Image (tube, rainbow, N blue to C red):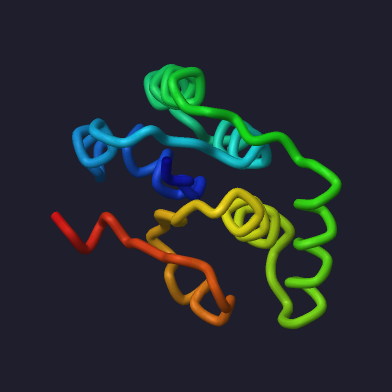
Amino acid sequence: MILLDTNIFIYIAAGKLERQVVASYDIAHASIAIIEALGFPDIQANEHLILKSLFEESYSIALSDSIIERAIMLRQLKKMSLGDVIVAATALENDLALWTANIKDFQHIEGLTLIDPTRQQ
């Protein structure tokens, strides 16, 4: 199983990344990804529908006490956005590789496996 960062869901919905890139994987998302993606004020109706479908098809990992504790520790080490720190903590706590188009936002985190599928096309 892999964890998709919010930007990967958005890229797929916008047609900037082919859905087939993740089709052969079991995919998961941190619960905050739904808020980040669907809460965007300028989201197009068709993108909204695609995102909802993607989130329904992927495994949702809820914010747990252990993820919160890991997120606190990560945020104390380096300033990160709340969304990014929750996504990173979710990946670490569940021993999942994180697929993101923003490698630089996460590369300082020890033990986090990062893959940028946008560079593999």
